[in-house]
Each structure stands twice: as structure tokens, then as C-alpha cells.
Image 1 (spheres, rainbow, N blue to C red):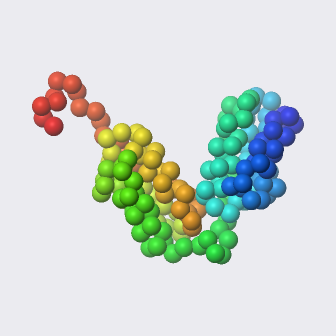
Image 2: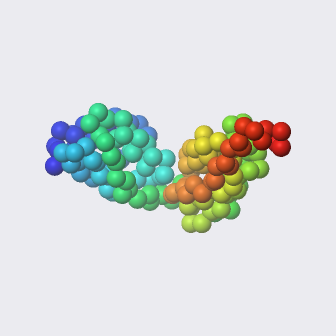
Length: 156
């Protein structure tokens, strides 16, 4: 157990305004720099914020995310609304090729599918939809197209 690292994690979570109830997150830190987060947060956005906060602490080598999302009633959204809002967000993002990514929604969990040219497009799509109110999780199944060999540029 690493009590200094646990204290640093607790301090970082307490300072982050995106995490309104940091006391609901249990922290376990090992001497080797591995931190496990357990407990409940009110949104997927809060879950991602907590994990990002911990990753940015000196001495943290690994974050094990065992946090669960329990949406509070005002944040719940029907799946069809979530899917529509996710697609709208993706279509409005100029960094993502329009129409190449689809979204499925089931009980607040979004699944992204499709194919893009670059890894950053897949990552941006994930970031875009993970911030939506009502999302409890995101599975990114977007595939990255294989680059064309330089000698086949003329086939494009």
C-alpha cells in the first residue's frame, strides 16, 4: 500500500470541479505505482475525468478503472435520444469524416462502429460522444483503414 500516492490521488480528485462527490471514489495504491479506483460516479464524463486526473499524477504508472456510472434521474436519456445526440455531435465535428461512423445505444451505453483513415479521428469520435449527458459507457469499435502503399497512390 502506498499512502502518499493515495493522498495525492484523493487531493487531485477533490480539486477537480468535474467530480462533485470525490468521497464516493475508493482509492487503492500499490508501491509499484498502480492505482485502483472503485465506487460510483454520476456520469461517464466524471469517470473519464477521475481516470485522467490519476494518470497525470507523478508516480502513477497504471490506473485500474473499476468505477461504475450511476446516472442521477435528471441525467437519464432514452437510447434513441442518446443515439441522435451522438450522431449530431459527430456530424458537427469537422475532424471526423461525416457519415463514416455509426452509433448504437443500449441502456445508456454507446457503441461506435465504422471505418476512418486515422487513429485521431477514432479518438476524437470517442471524446465527442463520451461527454454527452446520459452516457454510462462507450465502446469504440471504429476500425482504422490500412494505409495504401506509396507505389499505389495512383489508384486512389
